[in-house]
Length: 365
Image 1 (cartoon, rainbow, N blue to C red):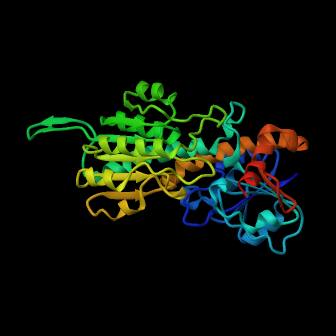
Image 2: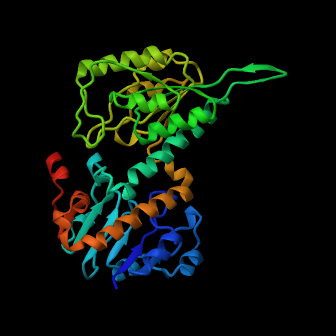
Image 3: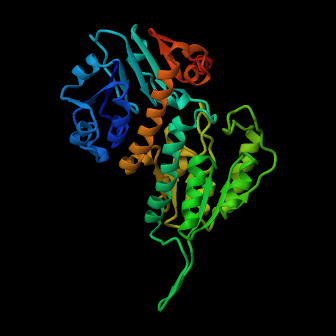
């Protein structure tokens, strides 16, 4: 039987790529090795992993050496001096310009990055990006409202009436939709903007107001993602947002374009118009952010650059992440003889035998 090695995350992440519940399923097909304390930050003890059939390995180098498949979210991995073929499965956001670690150049290594999976019905159970984006959207509302020093709903009592908070969501993907739904459930007044017209119905179905701007460029072959817009239309977006943010308490920005710098949606002028003590949570900060850099110097507004807010709910995030990766492992096991001809596996395969072979990545170089 092949051996899976579950790595402890580094870079201050509190998540783990497989939960003990996932191990229970995987041990029917694999021997599972778990790095000591891999799940501690997410609330999973080594004992929990052992009870579900895993073997705890004290030394990281030993685990890497013994494993055929190395499972992680985005750990740094040192393969120097290791023997045998390795398959690495993670979520390294390779299109966003993040460095591909040296393991991708190792002659005996295959590397799958699950952020490259196609957004199709068949791949839905493996969709890490959607799972974690949903949690980030939720947390953006919860943490953002805490910083505004206001409550979300309208409340009347002996001391008078408190007006509901006003929330603006920019970008209506998975994170944006979850942010809208969460803010509405809490009683806030919510508005939202996206360049994709088809998101209007989703926004309005959640009870929010859609800010519509005519003239966006759309590409129905982009897999549901927004695409880069012309400069004059970007200016129109910025002006419209500036006109709509004067009475907003919390703005959540989520607009990303795969393989591109995040578009600037909030300008210095927009922030100048915002109320004192307003808050912006920028979920696109890992790719440059949706806020004009000079705007960060405004002392009256709190800007939270948060690209991995799911990390603040590590237990919940690890459950979803582990389920996605387990689904991928199950699919890989059933189709490993046909990787290059399989639409899901070939899309996620970054490198093989030390060579980058992913066409989307090669097109960027």
